[in-house]
Length: 115
Length: 110
Image (cartoon, rainbow over all chains, first blue to last red; front, side, top):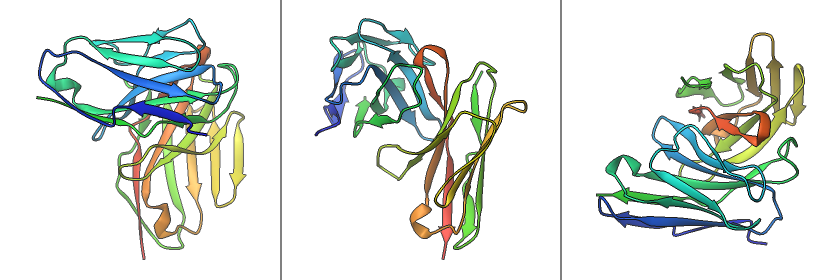
């Protein structure tokens, strides 16, 4: 049981390049999330998907787009990377309906550097 | 406007003592509250959650919730060096939005 799998683990981009961070979960969870973590800032919510077919903005959505491809997969796209997007990105998923107080499981993170 | 606030620390705690961590939130519509622990370079892991006013205990951890004052706290009793980590408070809002605070770093000294 892999849980939440993120790819890639590390990435270096040049300013203006685009890329997609992939996230897949095998726990049949309804809700999925993308966060970024910067020193001293904690986890900041970029986008979330409460259920398959829905996506909503979080605290810091500018510069990002998401796709809930199916129940398992939730991808995050940077269309034109900027140095301010240098961060560690975490994907998470949560079971039950959005109203359920269940644990959110996190992937191992993607360390992205934009130069 | 930051909706979930925590003291960043570091909070230095002698081994065997009680560590007390606080978290405040701004939205009275907040439904449930979670405490996660994150070791350096690792992913966050759930410690416990609470949704009713009062105390909830799980082993050496106690979560306390006061909705009228809009704060939630975490007590760690008999602190151990292995408790040295960053503790993240998370708030669940309507429609599944799960928002985290900046985290409090705890350092347990032998």
